[in-house]
Image (cartoon, rainbow, N blue to C red):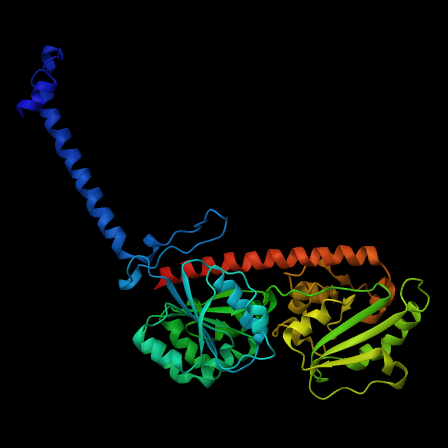
Length: 443
């Protein structure tokens, strides 16, 4: 303490503090040492006890994109990338799978693996054009995920058609449950199929371990899950429901000739999904209106899809074109030329428990949708201003007949749709980042 005492040698103290000051100094030294020790121990334990300490949100790079910090949880070394497995075991829903590739591949510091049953209709030509910080590292078959889980399990698994994946690859899900701590994102296509069944039995086991998020494709199907399906589970309280509009970038040429008016319907030709007769009965009125316009002289209704063709009335047969079994690049190229896209839903299930593929397809292609009030209330990610809104008392073709020929408004709506597409792409990537951070904190 001689050195310490010398520090105060030149200080003049009142007589009544002569015996008190050295004692207080000792107390201060002891307190300082205790605080320093606690800080050192705290940093050590906080750095190794939880995933939250090594994941920060948001983490923004110099180019303004979100980044996932290096994975160091549960034995991962510093610099190890987050391993994400996309599972598509049924060979369907290519568009949704592509949207997931864009949203999860839009994260930095990710190793993205695809376990896919089949690639259809040249969707790879579109996916290969994605500009992603974490593109797909490898594509292999769904059974390989089981072996990979035994060797190097993924941190996160995204089931792209969870209703079917859980049935077709039950062995994979069993291995994920028992041999890994992988977090499951289960994408739901039919919200009413999540009350009972083998798919429900499987994912409930993930929910019981706090390892499950459900993803809906629209707010209305997410609401159905939240209020009607998940409450029937005992494990439902621990399930988070997310929403991801299935949007991805796809280049289309757009309208080529103002004199040609293209209308479009897309999807399975089944009358159980689309009300073709309602559309056919109103098409003649649109043709009559176009015949009075000086700038438009031809109308074509493009039916893009597959299956048994509906019967077309003789009087409009030359106005209807069946575009069958197209590649995805050709599909979006034709859809991008449409003045209006017609949903023509044959059932109200598309407003509460099912998500239509027509709504996101119109946004991807940049073609305005003919939208009812009920549709806009269900698909809340679609701005009203970007659609041809149906007025009270109108049918879809009544609306087309009313607005046909307005090229100024058409150009405005195409611009709004393009802006909506870009916004949704960014929001999907940002939202997935948040989901990943929150999921990893739960493990």
